[in-house]
Image 1 (cartoon, rainbow, N blue to C red):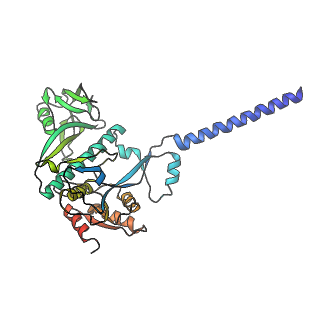
Image 2: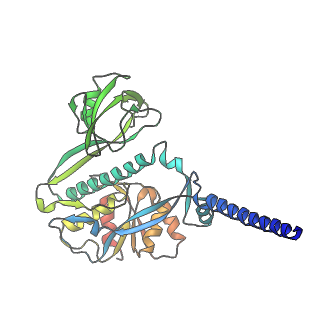
Image 3: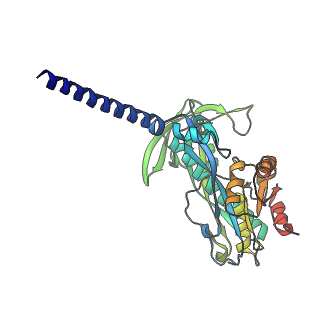
Length: 350
């Protein structure tokens, strides 16, 4: 009996040891893999051909080479990824809050979507202006992107389309400003919004905040970041442009969209048979603006065999410094205007 009791005790101790190690292993797996951290990791994303993303109704399809937009991959970091990427020369670790800046994840994603549609609209305008194609611009609605943290006092949500304010129809920012100017800070206004396809009532209290146009001045408003949707309509339907849905956000593909559109709207092959990647915001008059994450974008472009990379002039030093450390023949050229980009393509290899 004594011997059997001792065996039972040893069996129980053995079972407890197994469970203890199992619990420890599960805790380690949770901490390393599943426990959230306040960090994100930026790494090279993709370099994607633009031609399949765009339809020009009667466009010239000749294109032996290709234009490619470039992206940065953003990943929420767990302990394992932080450990692995701390040794990755192509990874950049940053605080999540530095990206969100007090906004929710939904608001951040809405901003990315509006930035992309805005870059597409600007690309169309820049291409039409270059090709001297007449067009009109139609306003398609005013939308809520994000509430300014600690300022906004309203029941509006990200991606709401503002239909009416105090009975006045609103379709663009100026319409809203015309209504607001007759009220004072602290007044609460009645708003009609379209949310998920249904019209709903909301309220917004007017607040005071620093003007985005002039940091030395204050203005009264909803304390909201807005986005306008527009449609650019060419005089000739054959020049109509449609962008297909994709999962890419942000404004930095504007330059490359413009080059693809010019290639389709004008005769000949602008690519010259080259694989051309690049990045940069674009304005309707063809100015190229700086962007973020260019050190990741040149890596993505090189992986897809790009021969020429068009970099905004303000990002050129950073892009060149990264490329100089890479084993690549890809040429990086600084551009500040659409004309600079066109000249760089024409002169490549000459």
